[in-house]
Every structure is written in C-alpha cells, then in structure tokens.
Image (cartoon, rainbow, N blue to C red; front, side, top):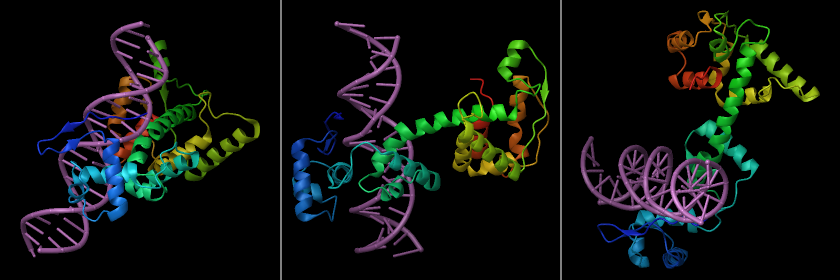
Length: 254
DNA sequence: AAGTCTGCCAACCGCCCGGAA
DNA sequence: GTTCCGGGCGGTTGGCAGACT
C-alpha cells in the first residue's frame, strides 16, 4: 500500500508530503556518494527542495540500505513486547535490538498490532481473575447478574500469599497442560495470568498482599465507590499501577 | 453500488539533548 | 556559564486501501 501524503509547499518554498521517485533517487545517490554529515546543508547540495529534517527522516525510515520492511515475525513481536516492558516507549532503543527495523516502524507496529493483542489478553485475564476471585461456590455473583436479579449478597475478598499464588498458578498450568482444563470458561488460562503479572510486576505484590479491603457489596455503585478510595489503601502503588489493576481485575460497567 | 468505517503507515511537528561557539 | 544549532526522539496526523454496512 502506497501511503501518499498530499504534496504541498511551505512558506519557505520547501516541498512537504509525499516523496517522488526523482527525489528519492537524488537523495539516495547523493548520500551514497557523499554520505550525510550535515543534514541542513544536504538538500541544498543534493538539489532538493526539502528540509534537512525531511531528508533525514526519508533516508532513515525508507531509503537506508538494509531496512526490513516486511511483516514482523513472531520472534520479533515477542522481543518487542519484552523490550517495551523493559524500556517503555523508547522506540529507538527497541529498534537498536532489531536489525533492519526503524523506530518509526516499530512504533507503528506497536500501535497497530501488539497493543491490540495485549488489550485482548488483558480482557481474558480480567475474566479469569473475576472467576478466581469470586469462585462459583461463593454466594457472590457478578454485579450485572446481581443487578439483574436484585441480589444483595456480600463478598469478603481474600488474598493469596506469594507462595500460595505461585502454587495456585503453577497448579493451574499443570492441570491446563496435562488434561486441557481451562482455568475459566472465558478461555483465559493461568499462563496468561503469569504473563500479565510479568507485564505489570507491581501487580504481583499487590495481588499477594495480606491486606483485605472493606467488605464489598454487590451493589455496583458501592463497589465503585470502594474502588475510588483504594488509592488511600495502597499508597505505595503508583496511580498507573492502580489503574492497570482496576482495568485488569475489576469490573467494568461501560 | 455507494457510502462509511477502520487499519495501517509514511511523514510531519514540537520538544529535548548534547556539543560547539 | 550561556546561547545557538543540529540531530534525534516520541507523539500525532493525513490519507489511502480494504472491509463493512
């Protein structure tokens, strides 16, 4: 798919937008012959009506030899996820670990593919944890069910110790791998939970802490008002982590 | 068939950093 | 120490193509 930005001329007479084949040829030929030591000067010497910045971008992201513009492999995707987990939005640093890939294409790939996949997994994990947190043997019912049935049951949340959590997840993985049992009917499995905890390390300590908040009612408004005060209960957690937690593990009414 | 929506990605913009003057 | 400037970075936008209604 050829992306074409409308060509325009800025107030200094510089061309903006899509590059023509002639411009590409000029830029490529010039850099291959003379290199690029001074981007602002380069377009003048190369006979291009472009800014140095524009030339640099075109070269780095499109014309430079050795660029890999094909689809991302699964290995590359995994590496990107791992590096992003470690480095955040440091696209250039991530790109440095992937030969032939530019920061721009990794950034685009992230926004297009990876984020979408992780969002999907987050939803699966959320469903898995709701089932875990509120097992079917409990008198608790999910809020929408409660709303439907006008129930007013209560639930006393419990937390697992670190070892219990690990035991729990490893057992789940074992049962999943040995006889194909899924942790929940939603399709999420323990492995996904473990992966999600790896993605958000702070959640591990959060989830396994002994602290138990006030009894939570099934009434949706009461639940949400309880959540709104959780920041006070967990001052050591960043707002972002709390948001992530609520997003992953708690109810959504939207 | 036509209109609308969505995904994708090239390219731009504004900001920041580091080195030179 | 300060200012200037080039290079680089991350975020955002523009617009095409294909999917969907």
